[in-house]
Structures are given as structure tokens and as C-alpha cells.
Amino acid sequence: MKTNIVIPMKAPNISKTRLRPFLSSIQRQRLALKMFESTLLFFSQHFPNYHVLVVTSSAIILRIAQKHGATVLVEHLPGLNQAATSGAVWSINHGFDSQLLIPADIARLDVDEMKTLLSAKRALPSVLLAPAEDRGTNALLTTPPGAIEFSYGVNSSMAHEQAAVMQAIDFQSLVLPHLALDVDTPSDVEQLVATANPLIRELIPQWN
Image 1: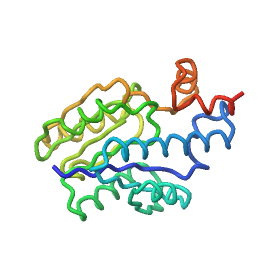
Image 2: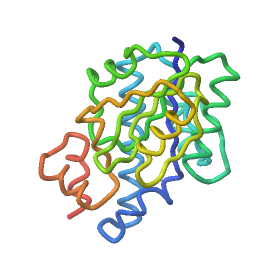
Image 3: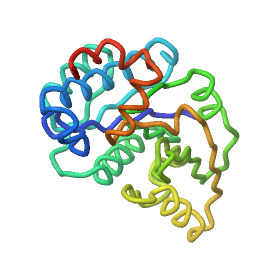
């Protein structure tokens, strides 16, 4: 199946607000931009045959995405659910069978985990989900792209499963340890610092 990888990304100045007051505004912006660029590099290096679409309202994000060869969909309406829906409409209009929506704040993207996700056998229609540790949704593979209504927020993995079940759509949940770890809270950052995560290491001096 032809799959479009969709990365929604807020403007840096409104990213990572849950990290206040643990990090300053500048530090939060640097962290968000670093993780976004690392996500783009991951897909361009390891999955170059997949198309990447970035959904954003930010001119800064647009320039970074284009620098890494990603397509950009400018979306001014707020919210992750709107970004996911707009990405799905774009994916359908451009001939994609599936959409993999993944955030730009996964602590460590793992090649083997991503291969497992992208190569998983799935029906048409179907929903394949990789949950976050807090029962959020850290990867959502929908076939077709708009198979269900997107319900990002608290316990979104359960909401997405329920949406699939209610529509009698085939549903799978894959527990992928690295993909389950995002960076949303101070405890997430402290965990990365404690384990000397490669992505975080160069930013640690900015937190001292």
C-alpha cells in the first residue's frame, strides 16, 4: 500500500507548553526544533522511499521541512485533530492508500520499530496504533487515511480504538517500547537526561 507519513508540527513559540516552568521559552523552542529536525532526518535517511508531509502554520517549520525534502501543507486552524484531518484529505487527494501520523517529539525513533509498523499486514479499512506510555497515540496508521475521526487528547489510544470498533473497522495495537516514549512533561526530559539520550545530550548545557 502507498503510505503517506504525516508529521503535524506547531509553531516553535507555542510548542512544549507543558514543560513550563521547567524550561524557558527559548529552551522549549530549541527542543521542539531539534526534535522536529531529527524526525525529518530519521525518515529521509532510513525511509527515503516514503513521502513525508508536514502540516503546520509556521513559516520557520515550513523552511526546515522543505530543506529536508518534505512537502508542506499550511494549516492555520488550531489543533492536532484538525491537522490530522487535513493531512488525511491531502493524502486521499494525492492517491495515498494509508496515512501514518506521527508526532515530532518521540525521544528515540527506532528503525526496526518503524519497519515493524510500516510493514504490518492490515486490512482495508483498518486502524493500526502504537500507544504512548500515558495511553496517548504516538503513531496512527489509518487505511484509508480518513478511516476514522481523529480523537487526539487524553487517552486518545482508547478513543481511536473505540472509533474503529464502533465502525467495525479492523484494529491493531502494537506496543513498541521506543515509540511509546515522547517528550511532553518535565519527567520525560529528566528521564532522557538520566539516560544520556543522544538527541538530548547536546541540549543539556542549555538547561544548566
